[in-house]
Length: 365
Image 1 (cartoon, helix red, strand yellow):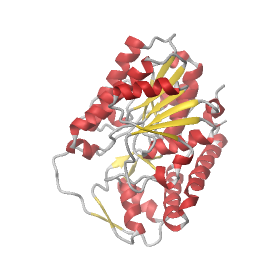
Image 2 (cartoon, helix red, strand yellow):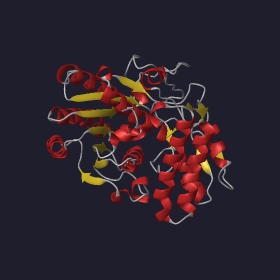
Image 3 (cartoon, one colour):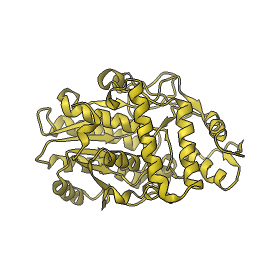
């Protein structure tokens, strides 16, 4: 079975389910008929996609800190999941400078606690552990990083994700044999945009907040380029990896990049310009911030050939589609009755799947 129907009636744990990516993944899995159990410490922003789409109606919520090793162990044993998607993290680079200890504890030790909980399971389970494209030691070269390139990073967030990857590799080699009950895959992605993100210090939420209040946006680094992709793109990659790993033990322990084609690297200024075309009377100005001593990369690309070869996965939406659908979601949020938001999100998931299917992408068929 290589289709999304594999998740129907399955017990699925999503850590970080109240976050931006986690809430979209939880909704998608619920749409597929999965019995979704979400694990999160709190709701990371107000507003949030989790609350706007009323996901408490479709997900079983468990209030738990992934730094609580014993609590995780008990919960995993109670649920006995068929699939696990680990997305819980401290995901903001600038916040990692302000509270580096919490960042290390959550991103590295928290991942180790997930691995320890998986060791206790007595049932077959596929676990997809999400790190970040920032786990690479980014020297800002013009070609994309491959899964075999050097890990690292100068800031606490990037380094903690690189360390999490090292922990995962150690656990796979030491405690999760290929013939065992638990199969593990690792997904690396970053710079996702889409409706329902209100995290601090991110360009799309900053624009949406400002434009909804008829304010001008000030950009810090308009020339910085990123491999922008819609949030549904990497999520489809994680689902695709889980499907493939369920049927193919040879993928156990493998890492995969999920990102747009290498030519789809656009600057912050290009992103905001295109968003402004879909929002009446939107405006922005370029006012680079003063040097604060914190490292921030200006260029990052991923090579996703491995996902294409082994998973038959590639991007469904181009840059124009991605930006348009992102702004459409926020316009609905600010202009339509709030109870309709879950319908908007579900429609975008189905629209995305139909586009993927029309392009012959394997997971959508």
